[in-house]
Image (cartoon, rainbow, N blue to C red; front, top):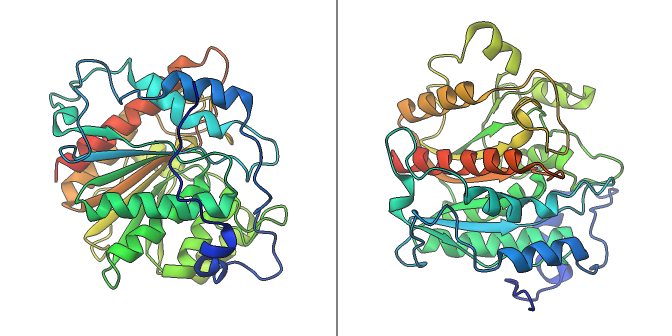
Length: 337
């Protein structure tokens, strides 16, 4: 069976001019020639083609009637070690078949979940980012909430491009749950690396960022945070372990519209070993629920989200289910608005 992918067929040279404005001129943008799709990915895409999000008790909705549009972005070309995040979206869908439809007494799935066609994994990094921008943009224009599954964290650039088009001129805040700041100028000569994604986004749009769960910085990341101290708010994993989640969590002057970017590395490796850069001292599930509760209490509007950096491991179905549970909890958070 041939797997179908969503793609409008534009080359990076046709769509990359806007993105090129925010890349250091001397840097390699990771935009290599298109490559054959890995056989392992073809196999799992075939297995999950047409699969809805959630168990059979969550009745899938069509695009028109679903509150949430799930977008699969299997980008893995920025990782020199090839850690397998291109398998992440499919494994999250598989894991979702095992979650319970009732979460904290509520049923987020009854608002309707629609899974869009997978973005083509044989695109270059820049092409996939811009294809994602188009897909997210279409979802936003339909009045739906985009939930993007990665793939590595670089995909967030595509989502933010779409949000900028939709809400141009309106302030947006980013809440980033992550073990890492992702504020490097470039990493191994690649300025489109996931190590650099939040810096690229801040350079382009200057959105304020609340970073939660971080526990390790490069020197240039620390310097960038200090230089732009008014734009970066930090709640480290150590802070949370020492005194609990700060209340209020979100600064008073943070924008009303919020985008939630959830890198699974924010979780402790004991809970989430299947991620590209696991880091000890991370967060556990009750702390995530506390963070979400405080976001909910702030009254902010969640306008979209991504869950990224799942790198599936053999016999690691527990990690797949955990990642899917994160997605479902985010849907519940969006619905509470």
